[in-house]
Image (tube, rainbow, N blue to C red; front, side):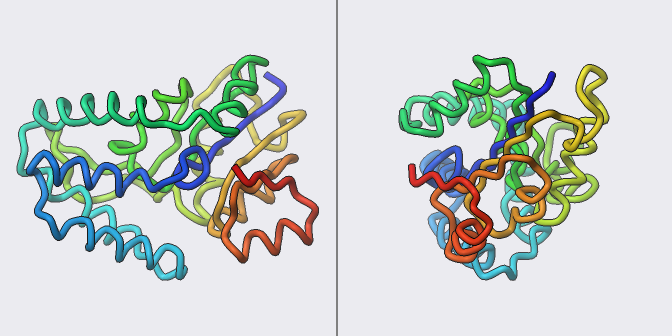
Length: 222
């Protein structure tokens, strides 16, 4: 395996926020109250401002789901996965993923989003590997806690390294690949963007755009 392709999820692979899509789905299903969207949006604002406490966000997003039977949660996730697969736009990022997969690159979604939410999106893109924030589950129910460190900001390179350590057939570091790509929209992902040979910014936020222009990185506007 000579090439590695990593993809951020929200506003990169998809032109929207996966957690908001999941929250709205649960509100429609009656699992969450109508105020859930506003509460989630506040966490989004904190993310953009660089003040997000990801532990608080995961706790707020997952803990209410502990009230439901694991079978019910699995059913919702399956239905949600079918819905979002039908809604994904056939855009430049779908094409990029297909190109990396067709040439045999090792591909992974690398996201701060909890695995419970992110997994259906990785499946929809046909990407086998997912490096995500891991919510603690006990007997199939989320506790609201995070296992290990979240896949967030400066922790993303370490979480990618942890994933590579578990792949016996892969090079053992990002630097060991002849070529490596990471696609992201956010300045929060700067540490992982700087770790690859081909950083690609996708409709980036203002700070990342300025950094990418100065560094001469590839820019994708969707």
